[in-house]
Length: 203
Length: 189
Image: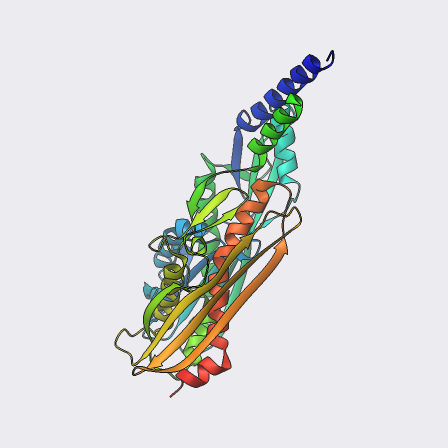
């Protein structure tokens, strides 16, 4: 009887702290990693006779297809491939040439404790800052009209800081996570296409 | 007692989304495309897909993951979603032909997603596929896909993982169909 009010007060206090930590820690700042050299479409070597290609794109989260993100980034990838100038035409349907280009971007968390870190930052109202890094592995598989398969693989990363945490070294701040993901997608796709264009199969 | 109630409420706010969302549109799979291109059939039409008469009806409309309801973007029916997924794969492989004499139809017989556990989650998707050639049934078989994966106590981790895994079940079920020896024999020239 005597202890019940104290329990209730403690319960309310815990509830308050937890709920504030959930809703009050939204100050995440994304940064696009700067290790991958930024490639512009003009730097990509164009083949003498570009051919049409069937483009397939898949975004994965830890190796599992993420249909929602695939839909969201499909236009970014298509635009990057079109801007590269390596191919004459792009389409989801089979190309007359028989060539296929399959691009997979796999989001691999480099830090399994990301949730715990974010929770700790929220619980302390941002006083304990934290940073997490998401890795992205871009795999480009090209099958030429003659059936020759070429694979190029590149890595990129997005860093996210929360609370009182400084900016990571060699990274470019993005306005939003959405902008960071689109920038990462464009950069890693374009860089992988440059490597593809330099492959002897395009000579 | 009130303390326990408050604690439970806080836990609910942490781990239960109670949201409803549609799963993402099916993406053509390169593995399925390659399997279909190996088929000697020049093309397939796609007929009706519906829930099996003896299957529990809500399984065609909704599956749940820790209080979050997942629905289909294809006419609010997972049987229709399976049909659309089949059409997407056939189109990407250049094997979709609405005028073909070979017509694939199906009935969704099982559709489950269980991610309530703190360490493991699983899903089962099964359908009875039939292929008619000029009106005569040449293939009629139930095909099932089962997946188990490591889950998490944290809903914010477990729910997105379960949604991705569940959505990918359709790709894997169709892969089983396309690689089925009886299917390949029945649909070959």
